[in-house]
Length: 131
Image (tube, rainbow, N blue to C red):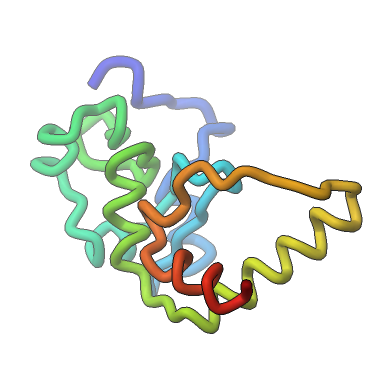
């Protein structure tokens, strides 16, 4: 657990998200896709508790001074959570088209997708339908 718990007020954790929304799951997913911040309700929804943190490792599930998840997760736990998020092929297509607009506006003409179908099962079908 050493190294994960931080008393700094600059460290954002589930408490911060709970102040924004405490009555339903709230998840902030980084644009790189490898980390998430979850509020208390989202941690409960995802079954991320002290035992899960210990099993996955404190480098992937950060914990507070008492050993309870503080809301920050990365790598494998992120992919597990992402696979359980409600989604649809239509939503994936909307997201991909919006991202494409941003890429084009910034001069990108080609991109590589680093395995987005691993955490987002609907993406491969969305790519196929958009093609």
